[in-house]
Image 1 (cartoon, rainbow, N blue to C red):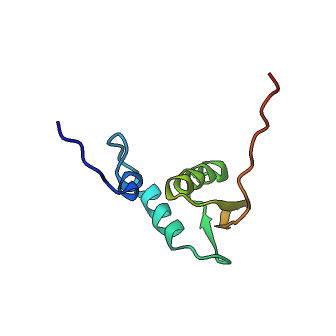
Image 2: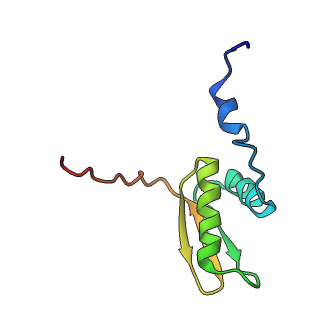
Length: 95
C-alpha cells in the first residue's frame, strides 16, 4: 500500500461510495453551479411532480454543490436563487 498527498478539492469532486446521480440531479447541479447572485430560476412542474419532491431534489443538489439557496413554492413551479444568509445553528441542550 502507498499513501500520497492529494488536493482537498479532489476529495469533494470525487464520487462518493460509487453513487450514480440521476440525470435530473446532474442537470440541477449544473444549473446551480452556473447561477449568479441576484439571478433567479424556476422549475415548472411536470406530470407526476409535486412541489415538495422538486424542492427536496433542489436542496439535495444545492448541498452537493456546496451552495445555499432560497427556495419558494408556487402553484405550478418552484423558484430558487442563491442566498447569502448565514447557516442557522441549532441550540445545544443544557446538560
